Every structure is written in C-alpha cells, then in structure tokens.
Length: 540
Image (cartoon, rainbow, N blue to C red; front, side):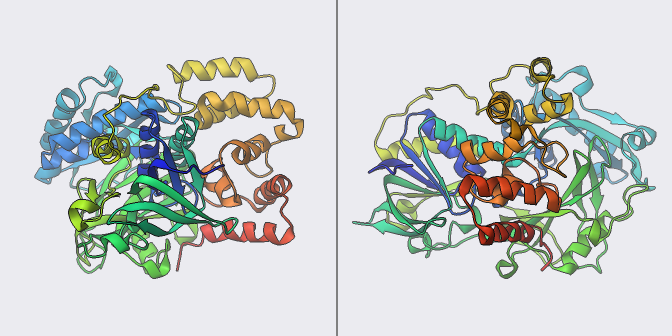
C-alpha cells in the first residue's frame, strides 16, 4: 500500500479505540492512516468476557449517565454488526445482604427496564425479573449457600467474536479510504516549532522505515500511551497506574446464561475482596473474570502460578459437578487497564471514564491527542466525542458522516432470516451448522468465502482437527484481511484458537497453506508454529 504525502490524521494503535476512531474519521471523509505495531486488536482489546454491557452495573452507584450511555451504545453496536452481536441472558443470585437483596435488585432492574433502556425493543421474555432459588438452580448449576435468597435475570449482549469486531472496524475504515498497517511500529515523532508533524515508523515485517506526515497524530496505544516515543511529549505528566485485567477460559459449558457470582471475603488471602465474577458461555467453553493483579511488565501477558491458583480457588466449588485445576485452563486473556486506586488485597477502582489528552494544553506542544481508554463497549462513542476536537485541530468544519453506520458484513436486517436464506442457498455445499458459523463470523461476506471455494475447490476442505474451519477461511484472511502470521489467522481471523490452542494437525495444515501463499521456507514455518505455541504460555 502506498503511503500518502500527508494525512489529516494518523492514528497509532489499532485496538478497539483506535480502530473505531479510524472508522469514524473515514466516514466523514477525513484522510486517515491507522498504524499498529503488532496485529490489529492483539492487545487489551482481545482480553474480554465477550459481553457488551448495557449499563446495569452502574446503577448500584446511581450513575444514570454512564448506565444510559452504555445501554444506547449496546443498541447502536447491535445495528452496526448484527452478525457479531446478539442477546445474552444473565442471571445472578440475590443475597440477604441489603445491597444485593431482592428488594435492591428489583429497584435496579425496574429502573434499568423503564428508564435506562426503554426503547431497546426488548420482548416480554427479555424483560428483567426476580426468580426463586429453585428457578435459579434450574438456569445454572450453582451451589446454593444459605445467604442466597433467589436470583435476578436480565439481558445484556454478547460479541460472538471480539477480535472480529475490532477487525471489522479496521477493514471497514480501509474500504472507506483509510490506509491501514499492522506490524508498523512508531519509533519516533517528528516535532517542529512545538508541533508534532509526523510519525517515523518501521515495518516490522520488512525492516523498511516510513514517515507518516499529518496534521494531527492520535495516540490510541492503550497502556502504552505514556511510553516511548510518546513520553517525549507526555513525559512530564502524572500518569495513571495500570493493573492486569485477567479472564480465564475453561473448557466446559456451565450454563446458557452468563452467571454472576460474588466471591472473596477470606482476609488471609492476598487477592481476596468481595467482588463479582462472571461465568460467560462461549460455545462449549466458559470465560470467567475479571480478576485484577498488579502490573508486571517483566512477565508480559502471563500470570504467576500463584495468581492462576488464586483464580482457580475463586472458581472452585461454585457449580455442582464442575471442578477445575491448572491443566483445565485452556487459555488466559491478560489486558492492562488504568486505575485510580489499588490495594494488595485485590480491591481496585478502575478509572471511570475515557478521556482525551491534548498535548498543547498539557505540555505546550500541538498536534498530539492521546486517548486514555477504559471500556470496550463505549469505544465508538469515545471516537464520536473526539470529532469536534479533531475538526478544530485540522481546521475544518464539522462534517456529518457520508456513509451508513454499518460495519463490513453487517448489512443485515434480520440475522436469523439471513442465516435461513444462506442455508437454502449453500446447503448443497456446506452443512447448516457450518453456514451458521460462517454467517456469524463474516456476515454478508460469507459469499466471498464461498466464491473463493468455488474458484479453488481444494479450499472446500475442512482444516483437519479444527471442527469445521475451511481452508478458504485461511486464504481469505491473507487475501482480504491483512493476516501476515499464523497467530493472526489462528487467534484473530478464524477464531480457530481464541478459546484455546488448536490441535497440532490444524496448525500444520494452516501453516502449509500460508507457506504456499507467502513462499515461506522451513525455518519460517517453524518460527510461525513456535510463535503460536508461545501465545498459550500464560504461566510465568
């Protein structure tokens, strides 16, 4: 891809916040480059319970503004990507404790249904409700305790694949005119006359150096926003502390509901506070979280053995017929989040709202905006709220979006009807379950996958040991979705390994397909296989 002489905006960091921002910019006709030093969405944005929270949690603090924002954004995202986001029923026990009692939950659920999201179009079956102890146990095999008085049911939304949602912003921005680059590491900023004028970057795949000149540079690098090279401008600022946010994946389907359980309270344990864990269904697995541990840059995205055992102790004994040990943890997601308070006991106060740092105001150097990012759900809203400041910086009047609010593959009005139509169209070539999965992954782009199969019949074959992932998906990831490594394909394109390590047979098949496409030799294939193996080494 050719680099332009000048961009209105260069966005550094292609997690969910940078990707959503690039999409919002290109919808308004603003020339944009998006740079990511690794793969798109490979950092904290990949660390998720896959829940798009509708704001119920904020009602316990009487924060109606955040609650309403989250509910509206949830509805917006369901329109943006109806193939990736769907309804998720949730349940949690009520307790004798006043703050978690039936009366308290009833008040919260009533406000949620009638004031926070009254226009959501929820059906009667999707309305929030209180249930009995017996009904609670029928929905999830919770080990009941004497202080549990029943349960509460409400509905949130779940992302079928969070990595593909982030990728969808990137690909849609690219199709709307953005120049997008993964594996492009910014090593220095070009500053002249107290203004940031360019990003000097290295292509980590080729070693080539590039300059991206711009009117505004936006630092959307998450936990790295105060690291080099941005510390050259922001180094004198007081920076927030970060913690590792941890979710673990267990290879068992516990319930069709996302189950919230209060855990903790043993003061003899270093990581013990009364807090809420969610057990979220994802296929035949369950994602559990979120725990918070001190930031440890020295161990990267890993946990210590003590930390993973602390997680397992919180999980142990919560559900009938389910016990898990360290060997049962199929994957660990680790991301970094900013906090305002942290105690060794495990109590944490996350920064409540995203913010935008204008380096001209803070440090007297113009041309750099930095996003302190907080929440996956509201990333698009933060991007939208950034526009007025960006227009001011590039000296242009506000421009309304010129293209519809849809992400690539999301041009669907009724997802179930869409799947039924595709089953009728492709049932002579693919099973109904495979078509449903492809539709959930790619939306309307399923037609491009099938067209690739038609052109190359060998790509109809299922990747051995993968379930039903097709060879065409591997090639499509390279051709259309800027996948350059085996980890890109396995973890962030096909979903082949986002819940745990793929089988060796599947990995070998995938690396052979990629080797043919990219002309890799034996040494490169071995490095790619080793790179994927390292992605699952989560215990330091």
